[in-house]
Image (cartoon, rainbow, N blue to C red; front, side, top):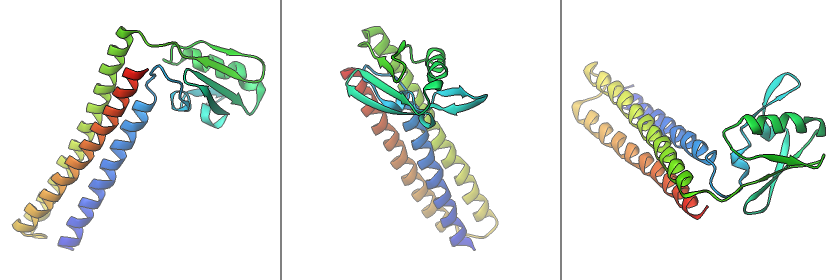
Length: 189
């Protein structure tokens, strides 16, 4: 049980760290840059026949040019609800429609807005790093309890703690890469 249990602790830690990176990646994808992207709107909740539904389930998206996002609803009757959801989101873009599709034109970002968004993405990336460190702390405590209970030796504990630290560094650097890519996107925007 000892070494297998400790290996399982590491496996669970890695899964949870991967999840923290994915959550961070999704969070940052939803931050608007000057470019149009379906990720900006796909998770916006739309009131559709009395139920909150993510926009991605109600329409397809296309980006015919860098600053234009076209939303094509499966059901034209949903257009008013989709527009209302976009208005009430934090997107800050006014939708227009021709009865068949909704167009979102993204204006270039001002320098001030770029700085605000840069702070926001750094903050969200730090939340991702904190989540990864919390996983490390929690799993380290589990390993220490296993050593106290005599399930693994002190040497095994040190070996597993080193592996846990390696995983932590790997996934924190993954969050850093996601952040760098988003900041580059903001500068280009």
